[in-house]
Amino acid sequence: MRDPRLEKLAEVLLTHSLTLKEGQKLFIAGDHSTKPLVKELLKKAYEMGVIPYYELGDQELLRIMATHAKTEQMILQNKWNMEKYQDIDAFLNISSEANDAEMSEVPAEQWQLLMPHMKESNDYLIQNKKWVLLNYPNPSLAQKAKMSYDTFFDYLLEVCTVDYKQMEEAQKPLKELMDQTDKVRITGEGTDLTFSIKDIPSVMCFGERNIPDGEVYTAPVKNSVNGRITYNTPTLYRGLSFDNVSLTFENGKIVNATADKTKELNDILDTDEGARFIGEFALGVNPKINEPMLDILFDEKINGSFHFTPGQAYEGADNGNRSNVHWDMVCIQRPEYGGGEIYFDDVLIRKDGLFVVEELKGLNPDALI
Image (cartoon, rainbow, N blue to C red; front, side, top):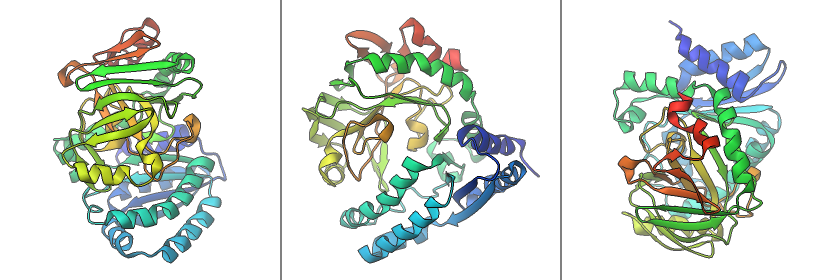
């Protein structure tokens, strides 16, 4: 039996996120657990006159390849990917990882060998094609969200199909303010951080690239970050989970980094020079996402949160930082998470997770729901 909510999600993805037109070519990547949504996407694509292609991968097989692949293989893989990506108009990536730790046994030095070659084709795709990324429900995600599978399935479809047009309108005053702002200060438990965002563009996110969505991001001027930040949500990178991450900055660079896995944290931050500088600063505003679940596609959109990201800057908000790392780390500032304040040019704009400036109050959860 067809689920009308999956039909609605397929329509949102193809018409709102990717805005596909008749005759355009779409590449869908997923795995076998995502077949129900892939089927709806194929049907909707053909109905629209879009030409769809699909590929269903396997995480365990990918781990074996990542562990053993040599440079020559990755060069050839990158060449194949480039030829494929050059021939499409849009890319839709449906993630449904059954085991977050599947890649944790791939040695750090192997990642450093592989990432430059993997990054080239991925960067081409991101910079030159329409694309959207979303997660599909599975028991692993439900467990992380501390929900039964049925409850999580309903929850995911609800947060993925919020009114993105309303969200877009509500984000416009925040973008305007960020575009005019020089100095940012963030305070909270274990956090007192200052940096500049002067002349770095801000970008609204309302369902065009990620589903679920809900953030406005920019980047700090590369050498302007000073102070300390303590993240109060767990974070996952390369199959490893980290808690209690604390970073200290001097003139933009992370000079001290601690966590429950301090050595592994610093190994990642030593991937290259850019990994110790920040590539993104963003405010999360999805009204239906409240709690972290160790999945960044959800966690970075939590209402009342911000993320401050070591590594590569995005082209749309480019501060010049280059890295093979892009690690979104999230801090929630609602009262139950310790509270906190964000100031733009010495004016308080958000306190304890709620916007206090009149023109920004439309982004608070009670206004968006």
